[in-house]
Length: 243
Ligand SMILES: NC(=O)c1ccc[n+]([C@@H]2O[C@H](COP(=O)([O-])OP(=O)(O)OC[C@H]3O[C@@H](n4cnc5c(N)ncnc54)[C@H](OP(=O)(O)O)[C@@H]3O)[C@@H](O)[C@H]2O)c1
Image (cartoon, rainbow, N blue to C red; front, side, top):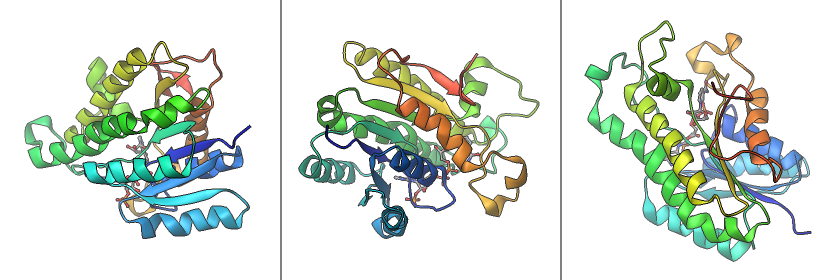
């Protein structure tokens, strides 16, 4: 039985969710590929996992650069025979301080769409030969509650903040549905996971009330390791299908 492999995007920060997912999947026996726009940011994290006895590789990947996606696909195709899990975790929140859709910055929207929609879509296409070569690959798109806020008009007791980020995540959820449908006659399952507020940005000062990254990572890993009878095209929130 060949070793399982997983590619996790946005794995440049030790405190980030991507690294927590990489560690969890490594502990499940996967050879994990950690990616960052600057490979030198991912390499020390891959080295940490190797020091702990896991199989880990660092790779450069910029989701807003098609050539970078193709280079990553070439490298992976030459290195591995298959890909069991693709975790679209990378994210850009260029408008964290924007509190109204009427003040949305279009450049921020473009960059959020590149990282959360165009990039993951192109990456999925580029990885399809490797995903298809795995017995039952899983694709997990890491989304946000703010996407649900758009989808349902949900009043979360606060206005929709970060409109560019939120719109991009809303479209990532739509992409999850579209890809799940396109792959419905294959063993590949595609799901989205909202990790909930997670303590990944100590500098923001709200980590005490947020979920530990390792806890949120478990929800993502659960979607990445679903059995053959698992759902596809679902949105999971805090480990459960979203209402
Ligand atoms: N933390 C939370 O409370 C929370 C809540 C809901 C949803 N989420 C979602 O969970 C995921 C992880 O959260 P996080 O807080 O750990 O994220 P993060 O650190 O803000 O972003 C994850 C990674 O995305 C990478 N990235 C940004 N632009 C990129 C690009 N063009 N190409 C490739 N990578 C790029 C960054 O790497 P580099 O810039 O170093 O390349 C960064 O390491 C995100 O999708 C986020 O939206 C988080």
